[in-house]
Image (cartoon, rainbow, N blue to C red):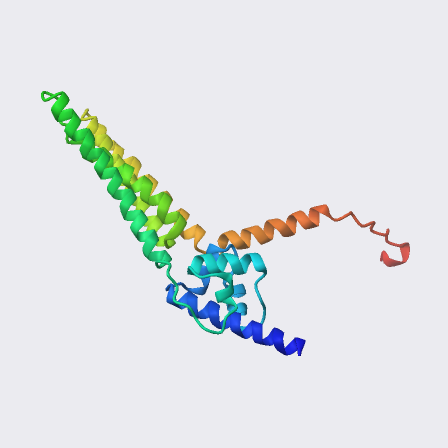
Length: 228
């Protein structure tokens, strides 16, 4: 009976995790990332091959917007949480909009406080790289790596344009040459991070360290008979 009850609990929890995960429009990897586990662990739980511990079960319930008891119930409750990805997108848009609000306020204050000031519109030019800095922070936390790459590239070129416009001196166009070199480095960095080069290098380094830590073995001297 105990074994059968355990199997029933596993099936119930497995069904609930899969149901609520899909209701929140999350993949197994996305859910695993939110609780600092691997996608394989979530897959195992949804197959009923294992059970998350109590702390993880509570964390899953909080993500889905249900109670821990709901995770053990055979009847699915309606999750009242907003979809996590939707909330992330809203937070990202609000943060970016805040940058433009501050830029607009600076522009208005300059126009009102110093009407004779030249080029107050530079407040909006400076806001562009600032916006991409905010975008890099948020996309690195919540969004795919290609989007982070695009935001970093946009930051480089928008920053170069802002410097060129803010300091219109002779030869300042060379800042775009620097931006081009940085762009090349960013492309190489992205390719390096998203290939197996780093993992292969790490394994090779670990093997070298392991070999270096092994005690040296005494090599027996060759006998005269072995020397021809």
